[in-house]
Structures are given as structure tokens and as C-alpha cells.
Image (cartoon, rainbow, N blue to C red; front, side, top):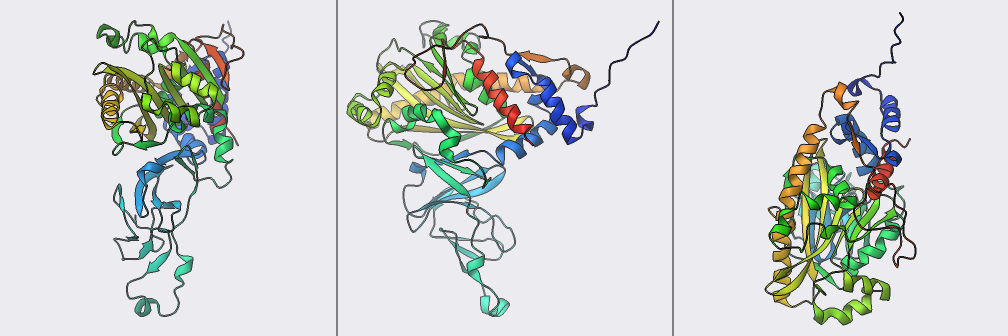
Length: 440
């Protein structure tokens, strides 16, 4: 009797870069709805993500309302690098690498503030909030006439703005922000261009022992989990039935971006009625028609942004709340979540307070929905760390909705499916993810 032995595949830890890329191409099969578990926690996959995605994509770093005045700044992280987002003395917004050009010290340690200048805590080199080096302690004594300060300004990072959202990229060769966002801009308008919006307070931040991809996957496609994970909200009477999250549309707009649009809203118009004229002026007629019927909208802007519009009843009225969060990777199996709450600038003050309260109760760090989702992200990530012989054979099923066909003549752009219980967007998200990390 002869025994045929299959070719042994090297352990992931032992694979060369080219072997790993080929293994990813062979085992990650989005079009078939087959996603292997190892991609959710393996360090070598994470290394590719950081190099191919987070050092190259456009990433959200701030909203313009966070730095409204000259001298205002916030410090944020971009692809693992600390940056200062400043409203310069000349009125221009800049994104500056938070690194002193003398010896590499972190220049600014505050999360936010208002500064005309930034002084390095190591040797005291002083920079304007526009990036120019303007002062060196004892310059004449220690350098004589050899130092040219004009060559030592802070490095400016490429950035652009859409709907008052400030994006930046570490890749000078990246496509324009306009091209990167593409058709998702039509839906971003509903969140951030329907009125002049402003951030409430500082972003909340918390850490989760889960991979960033699960946050994006959950956002772009998974309304189905609401039936069970968030089943308590129906029991509490916050929604009429457990399957309320099914009704509406799932939409994919390309480049890894997509959304779930819940409509119609049986509880009626959920936005400040005193701003209806502003909504009509700023939105296209079709967009305003969507806004009138909107129950909720959950948008994923690839790679790691979640934008949420939802509503609930508070003090006898329907109150919408709008938020933006990023799933920032801090390791192959961990992330930091930062979440911003936004309100219409000209809404009544009481309505703004209720809107912030509605978000806190549902999607704040201790909110009803957030606690449920965090448990899911943590356990799935932990389970993906199976021994290698199991990792090869554990494949998650993403085939929901493969029997469905897109609908025609929807008013907005994208590939549109009726009802939100579908994994078409997840399959598209992981196809985009795979193409990015295996690109040569």
C-alpha cells in the first residue's frame, strides 16, 4: 500500500514575505465568502497591514470644529506617527510631524490647546505653529554662523479636507482624497454636510483586546447581529421589534467603503425641525428625501472609520445623534477606539444636550450597544489565536446574501441591496483589504 502525502505548508511564523503573500491569496477567498481565522490576530499579517494600509491610506485625524481659532491644535496619531494638527497664525490648517528636527524629541505632549509656538522639552528649540524653526538657545555661542534655521522646519504631512473632516496620508504618491473617497461622499454629506456641524467636547478613548478589522467589518455589513447581540434593546422597548435592523439598504461604494442605511423611520423626523431650511439648502433633493426617512445610517470609510447616525426617544421626542469613531490598531490583537460626538451648530442647546446624552447611552464607551460589541470583538480575536494546525482549518462563513441581486434605480450611488441582512459589503471589504496587503 502506498501513502500519498500532501505538500507541507510552512508555519506562518516561518514563511518568507513572498510565501505569506501567496498564502493570503490562496486562503482568503472573499468572493466565496470564506475568511480564515488567522488574519484576525497573526503578527505577520498585522505587519503587512501597517505597511500596506496604514502607511498609505488617507486616515481621519480631526474635525475642523476642534481647531476653530488661530493657534488651536490637537495631537493625533497617523500610521503610528504622532502629528500636530494646527490652525496656524496665518489661518491655514497644517498637519505637522510631532518630531523636533534637532534630535527627534516629541515636540508637543498635550492632547489639545492653543499655542503660538511649540518649544522642544529636550533642548528648547522653538517652532512657530506654522512649522518654522524660529529660536535656538545660545545659537550664536553653540553654532556660530553655521546654522540655517530655514532648513529645519517641522515636516508637513500631506492632508486634505472633505465636509470639515481632516484626512492625512503618509504616502506622497497616494491618489487624491477626492478619488479615495469616491461615491461615499454622497452619504458623508448626510452626516456632515446637512448642516454646519461641531464636535462636542473631546473624543472619548478606550482600549479593546480585539482587532481593528472586526470593527470595520461590523460597521460595513453586520446589521444581522443586532437580533441577538443587542436583543435586550427590544425587551427594553427602545425599538419595536428585534428585527428592526433588517429594514433598509446595504450599499457598497468602492475602495472598501460602504454603509447600512435604515429606513423608513416609523417614529418620524429625528432631526431639529428648526434646521429644515438649512438641510434643504445644503443637501440635494434626493439626499434630503433620504434624511427625512432615515432611521439610522452606519458608514464604514476604509480602512477604520465608523460614522453613525441613529436616534432614540428622550423627553417625549425623537432625538438623533451623530458620531464618528476610528478603530486604531495598537497591535495584531488590540485597538484603541476614539469616538467623537457631533451636533448641528445651530440646533437648540437643549436638543444638543439630549443628542449627546442619546449617544452616551447607546454608543458611548459604557453604552448599551458598545458593551455588547466589545465582547464580540474580544472573543472572536482570542478564538482566532488557535494553534497553527487549527488555524489552517478554521474558516469563517461570510456567504449571507450571495443569492440576492442588487436593486436598480436607488437614488444614491453604489451597489445597493434591499434589506440589511447581507454580507455582500463584508466580502467587498475583505477583497479590498486583500488587494491592498498583497500588492507588490
